[in-house]
Length: 512
Image (tube, rainbow, N blue to C red):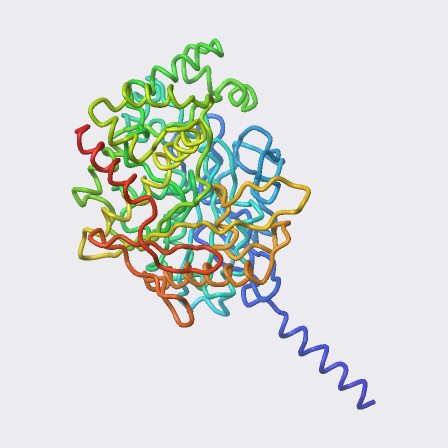
């Protein structure tokens, strides 16, 4: 009898210990329930805006309708409408949105929290997915928030409209919206998600006054936009941007006029004479015809100027910044130029700066010319952008910036090609999600994963990535530029590619 009572007691205690701290959570729109796993509460597919379908297609996100009872939030929502995700190059399924479901009804977010009560005020990280503004989802396996939640943050991933659904401009839309947000619905979605976080995250044990805006690739471009946008003021308190920024030279936003012309041409392709006609088309018809419409629009509402000027004039939302790029943030051009062609192209593009350009991007041999072309593309799209961002932010006395260069090469299976420290290779380490990535990781990788994720969590907590047991990460100083180098072990060293970046600084200044 005693043995039976003892076993019953053990069973009761086990069930009590496994009980979710948040069986239900009350949001402003109604009660929700999630799932409890490995001491982390997970809520998937929480709506933060009304479905942008029918008459709401190409409109700013609208409020969510309230509901009665408890809404189950235990399954990811559909990802935004996009071409069906399929592996390519180094991008295996771990990096991609699930192939289905895909839908215009996509404005949902996901929350991971290990808080035991709603009173803990844990720092919050909100992650904006990449995908070139044409693909991606908050449900990508390598964005899983369980481990960061265990490290003390409330982690949130969001969806937003991509491609033609997120970036179409048209004269009818300009009139309809009085020019506000035209062509920038993706960013309005992101802002709506952050507004939801501000209003609701305390119920999950998060601190609405300590929110970190974060993202990679297109997500980093989005971080750049939101840091510069007056519409996002007060919605976040720190920023993390991995591989991406919009500070000029080769990156140009479209003017409303140019974007409208692109939209008119798109409508003509579908034999649509108005936005009403386009809204009557199916999502599949729109997607099929809308390839290539992914450019942010200088609408003077969401985006109020070029990024360089906004930051140089201290008009951005000024918060601590952690940013950087990868050694493999380099994509080959459609055509690789010969050494002679590369030199001739430099003369044509850079004129009196051509000699200076060829000193830092030499082309004395065919191999050298090929390597220089890869460097130019990677530096203009990523490396120089993140360096410039850190440099501009570091010029202010209020908030510091921290710059990194990720060059660690994730191990690959012997029967697969090795793409090095490729674009996107870092966030599995930073988000502590290597367990979701099919590679033969070693103790070196596991340690680096723990270190990088600790830097990210520390930064979310305090605005400073440093912490006990971690190599010192020095704040960026333009007079003595250094960066945290994430090789096999983290180490602060002199800024990589300093001569190349100084060339682009000089050249950019000449283009005013």
